[in-house]
Amino acid sequence: MTRAKRLFLANLMLLGNLLANLMGVALMAALDRWAYMIRLPRTPEIMWLIIIYDLFAFTVGIGVLLTWERPIRRHLADLAQGRQSSPALKEQARRRLLNEPWVAVGLNLFLWGLATLVFPLVLSRLPVLFHLTGVMALRSLFVGAITVATAFFLLEHLLQHLLAPVFFPGGGLSRVRGAWRIRIGYRMAGLLLGACMIPFLAIIFTIRGSARLVQEGAMPPAEVLGDLQAAVVVLCLLFMVNAVGLASLVTVNMVRPLREIVRGLSKVRGGDFGSRVQVMANDEIGYTADMINQMTEGLAERERIKDAFGLYVSQQVRDEILAGRIPLDGEIKQVTMLFSDLRDFTPLVEATPPKEVVVVINGYFQHMAAAVEEHGGLVLQYIGDEIEAVFGAPLALADHPRHAVEAARAMRRRLAAYNARLIATGHSPLRHGIGIHSGPALAANIGGGGRLSYALVGDTVNLAARLQDMTKVTGRDILVSGTTAAALGQGVALERISATMVKGRSQPVEIFAVP
Image 1: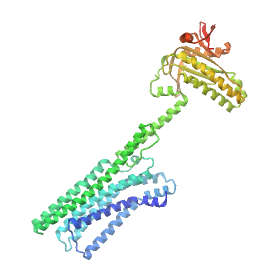
Image 2 (image 1 turned 120 degrees about the vertical axis):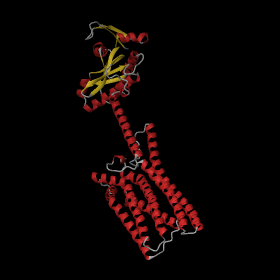
Image 3 (image 1 turned 180 degrees about the vertical axis):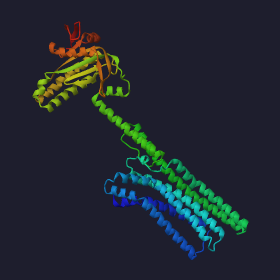
Image 4 (image 1 turned 135 degrees about the horizontal axis):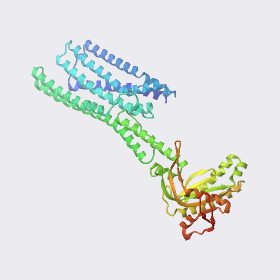
């Protein structure tokens, strides 16, 4: 932040309040000249009164705001120099910045209210027409109210569009403790007061004052009527300009935050959770913007968790769990289980540097998992150098035995291609055995100690693991059970192996090799 920008931002609210009051003075001068036809004699007393009060109002106004802005300026200086303000100073600066429009309202009410009392009181002791004192009192009251409303909306505009992005880059205006909220209802009340009620009251009192002059015989009726017509025209024109200006400020102060919210929601609807809504105020709209940002952060966090979750389980299981479609208490599924285990991997681990072992086995798992997923299967877990996969859960899969056998054949082909690369890089080739069995299994989220995993348990799982182990004895790399073979039908060529006793079974199990 450059020094010029820091000075500009530091004095922005001060200049905004000064500008609003200068506009009020200009409005008062225009009313005096063209509406109320006030011609004050340029006596020394009146001139000194104007000079002294203007100096007093300027000094008090600037002094109060400068005192109020001390923490704001200190924090802004820290930001400009790249320093971290203390948490207490940062909180105090933010709170005072949000409250400054209200402080300016109180200050302006005091100064214009004092002028409403002082000027008529002093003029009543000077050789001035008596009715002018009442006119000036009402004029000061009306112009002061309009000035207060103008200053409020102007300072709010400067705060929202220029200062809030600097002091609140991450939003959170509605969470600042001790800050007075600029609610939408207050805005509407201020707009109604400054743009409608005060102008109408000014016109009404002008008409009543003119009628009183006629009744008291202070001026000829024709002259009063002519002055009244000119006054009403001038009042209407000036107050119309004022109303348009106030309405424009209020509209911009409300429409731009709403557009930000619509823009942010449109991006969220499109799946973009990285953008944020710029929070500009601590009213209901600002609170809504803060809530949208929190919602967006929550959605982004959910996506990150979802993506990270997908690294530990498959996307299918992840999506089913997050959607609540996997019963936590378990369900019986008709599935085909596939177990794959590397052969003679322990000697490879002992003879190979650890980092190379990790590269080799990760490459193997990557190719095998791809083969399983290509055929609709799901890798449940990696156990050492073993792979456990299922076909038919958590999503139902038609003809899952055939899919499992085709996946085993794809694993065989991928292993051959992977071995060619291993041999080319000086590594020994890998061998594995695959066992496949079909049947019912219990599928559920199982675990303890705060950790769960999607798992299948039961005799179907155990038999598939036993068949994988039997590949060591039979010398075949892919074995399927008789149940799976029967489900495949006549379209798949298999080689029958004699029925074999399997641990955990009282009867021999028919076994087939996949050529």
